[in-house]
Length: 245
Image 1 (cartoon, rainbow, N blue to C red):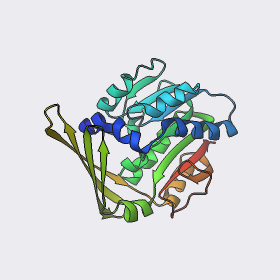
Image 2 (cartoon, rainbow, N blue to C red):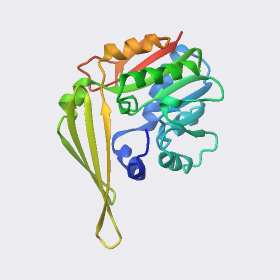
Image 3 (spheres, rainbow, N blue to C red):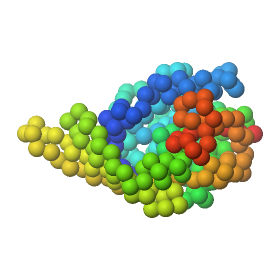
Image 4 (tube, one colour):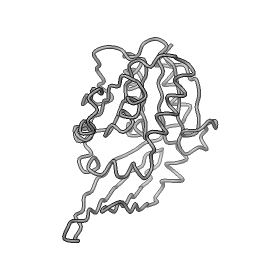
């Protein structure tokens, strides 16, 4: 992610409606423990405000959180977990001091990369800084979700003292423009409006799998989001678990 000045202000409120970080961390931990017995160093790439970083740290991982948004990281650091090291870096320019045993990249973060060669670059960077046998877990929205679910639809979230209007504009070839308007209630009863806009892109799963192979990963599984059901192009969101060869 990059920027998201206003989005970072309301990010945790919005995700509280949609994401159970404890459940996600336990699911990821369960997958990891099928293939590795030790916890080790974990990179949370595009960590946002650190919700999943904190949950995985609580499970015993030595977490490094990386995000391109200083605003997001300010909220992450404010959560008070001093065991987590946060770095402000763009995913494409990932540069760690050493190697990691695990990497997670969740909540559509790969979809925020709108050029396929940049996705390849991110996979290459993760591979470069991952130990042999290391595990990489990530999720991605499918072409089906972008075209048929997001499409030109709008969603409204009634949050504590905040209304969020989420509008989607599907532009074709997997690319969607997402526009967010937040209306925050003041003590006077009036509302202040904050707006944010960004793009997400979905890729054919066959393209993603070719990129992973090129970066030196073997695919261990591909499931519907946080389930044991096999993922496919008919899914809305899937998660991959891959291993560095």
